[in-house]
Image 1 (tube, rainbow, N blue to C red):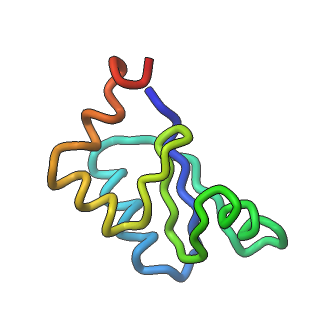
Image 2: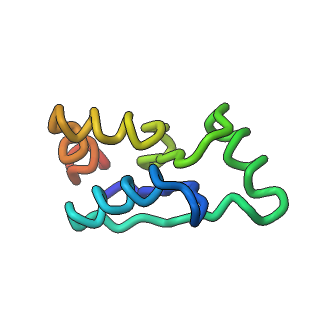
Length: 87
């Protein structure tokens, strides 16, 4: 399975929604708080975006919560994270 990484802040409501969606599906993810010095720069260089959350499946940028929710409504999360697709 691909590693799921999410750049977040503790005060972001969309970050909480994204975590709740992934938790509800039983998907483990690595959460990276962007508040420490330099971490936001890492996120921006990786995604080209400045807002949180920024969610990655492996090296693929999914986007923010709205993008994740859209992918879920299309059944795409399970397809992208299936072992067949990850391998």
